[in-house]
Amino acid sequence: MALAIDTAQYTNLDVKDHGEGVWVVTLNRPAKRNALDIDTIEELVEFFSTAPRAGVRAVVLAGAGDHFCAGLDLIEHHDEDRSPADFMHVCLRWHEAFNKMEYGGVPVIAALQGAVVGGGLELASSAHIRVMDQTAYFALPEGQRGLFTGGGATIRVTDLVGKSRMIDMMLTGRVYQGQEAVDLGLAQYIVDGSSYDAALELARKAAQNLPLSNFAICSAVSHMQNMSAMDAAYAEAVVAGVVNTQPDARARLAAFADKSAARVRPND
Ligand code: 1HE
Image 1 (cartoon, protein in one colour):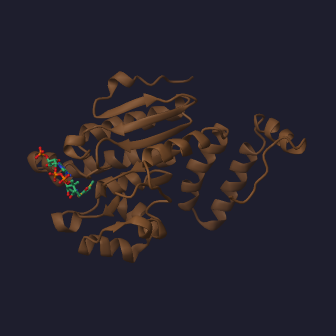
Image 2 (image 1 turned 180 degrees about the horizontal axis):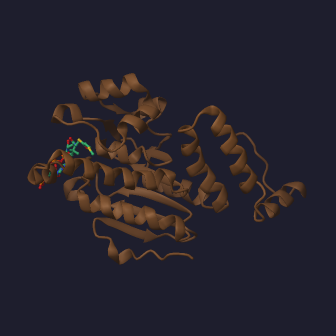
């Protein structure tokens, strides 16, 4: 049974239907550089828990203003003066939100500009594709703030750039930007214009795939990385058994057979 997304229930996020299954979710606290307070995390949990069952075919994740996201809301964290157990539970809600993004089976394309730092990088690294503009920069300032990552950077940022670079970023506050950031894997695309426009175009493209194929791409690949090679190969066969025999694929295969389907060609 399909769920409905109630856009009115979001305040820290701006949630919009862009048609043909593409939704845009924008962190909407630009005055706070989109810092992640607990309410924003709860809204992310809500949206990404609902989206896979609400017919959402692709999501652009953006940040309002000049910066994508300044990470943990340091003011809230300071004011709350949390106990270790309190903050552990905060982190578990972050993981809930980010795991729903990464494992939910709906493509999430992050449009990055300005600061993508601390928890903002943890959020971005939970997306399946990251598109940066020329202003975007990446850092993990936790070390300088007397903090540690709590939103999955030890797993996802390490996965993107490797352990040594991640540790260097945390120890020294090193900032990556521009083409170097792409070369390291922090983003897959860098554009001269708007990362939002480019991300929307990619989302529209991804949304044309069959939902079950996208589910496998955006869920199975992540799950399989957590498995032994033997188990991953087995799981891959089982997933392919389901996806590659889906009735909706038959028309696409028929189009290839009758030569009406586009061929794979090199870029111009
Ligand atoms: C914030 C936050 C925030 C800005 N929490 N309020 N993250 C950081 O260590 C990054 C902290 N932020 C910055 O370094 C800078 O703010 C930015 C580079 C992102 C932007 O600089 P700028 O000059 O445009 O803005 P600003 O003047 O520093 O800040 C504007 C307002 O945003 C100001 O509020 P105002 O009420 O005084 O106007 C700032 O307080 C507010 N603001 N960033 C709260 N992060 C699960 S563990 C994850 C651990 C982490 O993420 S640690 C990394 C935290």
